[in-house]
View (cartoon, rainbow, N blue to C red):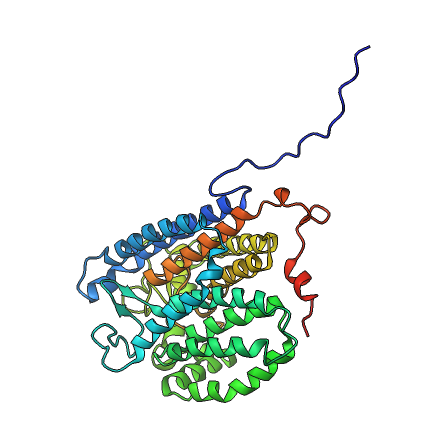
Length: 414
């Protein structure tokens, strides 16, 4: 009698290899990126013609510049998605050095030829194209902090050997950004570093102590007339939203609320918004979210926020599944960049936060920000690409990847 064949468990059904890596995360990340980019270019096409005419360039100038940046950024994203993310351990210190040199050029006297004053600040280098070094500094802080947090994960009990060295290097990069002046970007970059070391196990008591030490510096930075006026206007808006006026410090908030309120459920229609005609400041950049509300309405705003939420959730999933602590922290930092900057921009657009001047990632006009955002998305894809837990024995616990950050630092948070 013929022996019966040995029963074997059927192979687990999985999504096929697709896009830039195994699984679905990288492919979904690419799809979400293209959707947000496309939506942003369409909105920019409507929001920018009047701004272009004011500076005597073609109506399509800004959207053409952004599309060129998007094409270059997508190439960078695909290339970085193929680079093993361990490369960034080696590149961390060189990135910090390059960012610091570029930031110093902006604030040193005698460099005005390549670092001109625009709108009262020196934030761009003219190197054939305009480059914003603070964008590179944000990226450098993410990579360097992730690398150092892995090295120092056993030293976070000590303030002098744990958190303090991070604060020193961050300060060296953030001070030139604040002196441009660009306090919003300095706060954002600092927050990205803090979130990364917090995830790695830094103590809350150390954060509180360093916050107390830094508070006099923050207080001095805020003692500038235009910053005080902006904060006073914001406090007034919180206590009495109807007090906003169409001139003075509350002008931007007033026009942003007019744009959002006039959109209703379905919006005024593509190209039919009025606030872009000299009423809403920077409709193609700082307040492009308000333009979405005016022309696409509540439905358009909901769609856009939903796309960002999906992108951020996929990013955090990639971080949770990363093969090692460095991959987790690097992916988390990249995701935090998009999540935090997007939250701050949208918060300004709906009147919840004071005006910051931060771009909406993948959406607002600005090629430096666009290139850095697409670069960090490429790194996220690289982490997803190397996360193949079925090929890594011992990394699965009940079918799930362990939280390597908690394992490394014992879950300490206090």
